[in-house]
Image 1 (tube, rainbow, N blue to C red):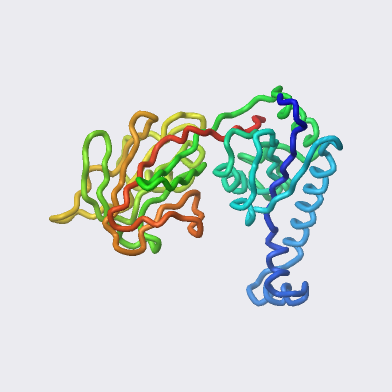
Image 2 (cartoon, helix red, strand yellow):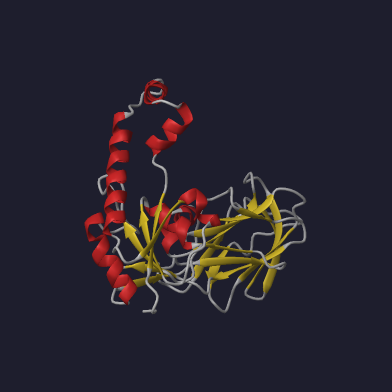
Length: 299
């Protein structure tokens, strides 16, 4: 533990109720909008109140002599995390993935504000344990999971990290053209793009792709220092092949891709299409095991 006082950083995202009010100005107008679609506002309002109460409980649990900060998902790319921060994510499991790519080893405590509505794979702890858990995290006395992340780095130095998967392809998911290189082999391909998934993301997009093909590539475990890549719907033609369509990426064996797209080529992580790297013609990217893990407080 460092000599300076820790800082508790509480990360949240707007609830669906809050977003509806922002869009429709009043509660009555939001309720009318939902009624026209056969939905009710009350369940969303109840969930909002539950999440808000959990957030207040976590904020009030921060020791009075600690520094503190609160940041919403939309401001993460402008927020500077410090080395002594203890990060408390209050929300859905996906919010942990949103935060993870901005961290460099800071401990993360996932707080589930509504267990009846949120699965709690990554946000496992109840708000009432927040003080106990953040003190243990700051003192280095907690038990951690080191969850492997995936990194994409272009030849010109742009870098993107993700907790679940990296997508390389066309922004509209139409045919993407590129050269792929893996395990000493290269191939020109036309496909719906490719993903490189971690063990944390293995139950999602990667699992869906793998389930629909004959494939011997194993899906990694969350703490496994390996990744799995899958090419989506590779198209065989006189100019493009379908030989390199899946494989295991290790710290010593990355995946490389060189774009042949004049427009629309992108690289993004964890399904966040709005935060991307342009992948234009001639651009090269290496997708590999990230040197930084997510340090997640265990159950």
